[in-house]
Image (cartoon, rainbow, N blue to C red):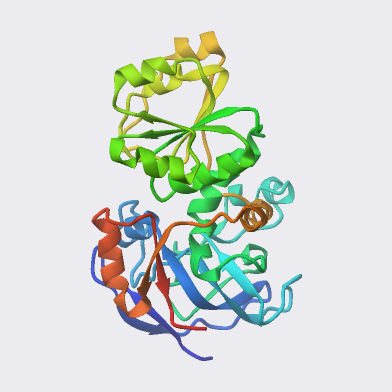
Length: 338
């Protein structure tokens, strides 16, 4: 069995170093992907630093991979060697629980996660269950597509799950790696889009990405002006905000939905929920079928992440660029494979 060549950390917060490993035999339900590009996500940093207490070392990050299938297990279906595919946070699911059988493989209680308890895609090869290797439409740029398999599907999934209508008014909190994609999706979906940002300097950029309106999320007067007006608000932020004002910005039957993890519990005034029949919810990434729908939608409407490219050999520089908050808006590693 040939060696996989990767970059790994030997302990929490340690720099990544070249690391070779033997992946063992390809399972019948797996595919092997030659990685061409891999996005870098804040979850890679969280796992690198063991913020969640589940990291194992040596740790190979990488869960926004785009590459070419080079090997197929005997049970793989609908894929072929040489096909360009992407891989996100999930690398496998049981395929027999009620969630998997109902098309919600992303909610499988025993789902395999690409960088949890296994080696990720900061490597020349990565493996996953064939169901999670999602083909890339012909008209999508593989150099930019990696972040769609994590950041993209994270914000696209609730649009599908909650049947967002093009007649609805939708807010997006946080115009960063997730939010800049949410603005593009919702604009092309046909919604009236309001961007919440804590920086007035981002207002013009938010509008260029698809927002029709902008609101300073830390300005109480601006928040009061939009009370009872939005049907759906998606929060991508990882900051503590005035959540009462956000809930009050919802129209009757409106929903505040979280895909970003806040640093502290979110206080909710139940009375404001009851009187407006409002809801608060959250979701993870989407299923393979929802991911495929998102990719088709991106190809149809020319949607792509705003990316910065780093060569694979500069992976530590790329990680520090992200850690310093300098990414605009997603960082991608180029493995140098054409």
